[in-house]
View (tube, rainbow, N blue to C red):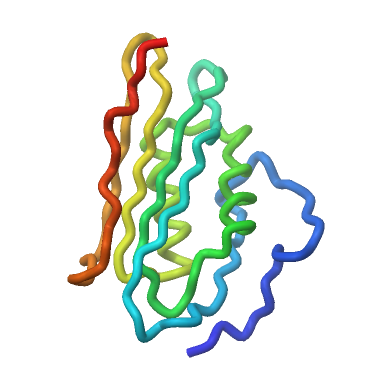
Length: 152
């Protein structure tokens, strides 16, 4: 089944919606190789959101690994979606699961893993892991490098 829509964001100037990820519509594109299983990784090392209690900014790295089915997650669409969290007040867990649910809804991957690695505040880093589906055999899934906390 082909995605008959043309990409909404790709190749166009877009006004950023920086405060409501719930209203954002992701822009999937057709997988040119739906007969092959392969993995894709996106990472957003400068992800930001707002603490819903203190209104202080939270900074993290979002890592998205997935095995596509019929549709791919178009990267500009993903970038704009992640930008929509900049003024969003949500706990780390909320942001992570909201990202996962949105991608699953629009792309319907065979397998997906979302990991959010947040900069420590108050001396405690918070990492959130979400995974859904079964990764096909003989597909390389990149290991997570969890040696990320470096003294400054």
